[in-house]
Length: 322
Image (cartoon, rainbow, N blue to C red; front, side, top):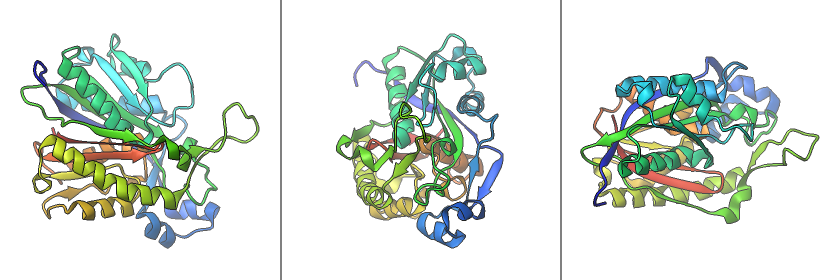
């Protein structure tokens, strides 16, 4: 757009809780087996946060790493956008506390809840903020304690979700390295992924429930469609992609989307879900950090990001990896 400068992801950081939870630990409570979980989701293990690993604390640790990698001083962070669907407090917002913990004491802070699409939504917000010239450095962080909102006895969800945080720093660039966002929602089917009660109801703790087969069918159709539109909006050919980093909901969905897009053999597909589970808004930056830290994809490559989840919400954009 005329008059707007470019923006880019300048650094990436991640925080993974220390406690690794294998399928055998999950199976007893849901009358299942390791084989069944692997076949249904591809998940082998996930991380669960302990009492001291809060959403704010994990977000701050991931953010510190991203800020350091970007070469940004904490005092130069202008805003923190925290994407999460598992924050249990209605107030105060959590992003200002993250900003304070990293030393960005004057930064604006806001929370954003678009569920598993949250990181892509927040990245689009940060991109617009930087390109407009209103700010120079924005932290986008996804942080989740899904173990707080998922029923450990629910056969449909207990094996899917995990905890963790991932962050990026968005800043100005000579050329545009974050492609146009393609996003939307379908509120008519909000009940497919939703809590089973209100916090005001009293009695049982409200847990998030999911209509698994219906969500699977929706995702395997919506993800390739949204991804294809994002590629077109960015003017990038599918063969040019260095990486495909979708929300890590389920390995079957990831693989189905990769097939539908007809990815080149050179394109690396993120499969962080195998050992992280579904970490909602944290899953894309966690998977991005994993690929970069392992050297599975090189800096400067184009990556297609796609988020999708409760709401129902979806979003995608093509970015240049830092």
